[in-house]
Image 1 (tube, rainbow, N blue to C red):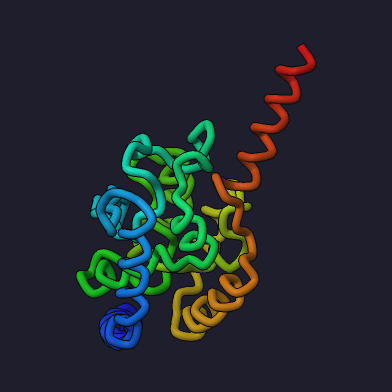
Image 2 (image 1 turned 90 degrees about the horizontal axis):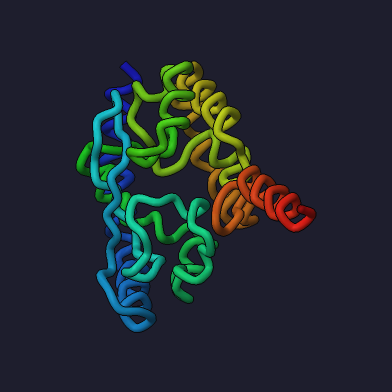
Length: 211
């Protein structure tokens, strides 16, 4: 019963948000076009409910010559691909705003596990253990307010599973308002990937140097 109510809330809030944020959209569109060559929107193949695929929308934050379907943390030097406007958009999470259209279209919800890239097989497999692939992915979720980029895959999947087990209006509100706090504080934002990955990369480089 709640899932039907959740869908209605998604539609109403997304339509209201789209109208209220239209001036912000316009300013960001102009900024992106002035900053670098390429389209305003970036489409990326992601995993949706029941492991179906859909095209997630974001404001473009990287140069058009960036390798496709490669998570930022797997790029050798992510900073060389991220535009000046892109750094601002990522830090403030404003690059996620176009996903309002994904929510209205029904491929996403406001609250839910963040959609994995189609080729993030390790994350998809971990989420299978907790039935986290069986709900609509979200614009934000429990894992996003508990660590975002710093979380290793197994912990992120466990938190997604915790959300699925406790899904309900009260928990959704906790995630919704917690997101604003996380964005304002930039909690867990690690440019170029997860904190765990960054530490592994540093350890490997240190080991290579020592040899």
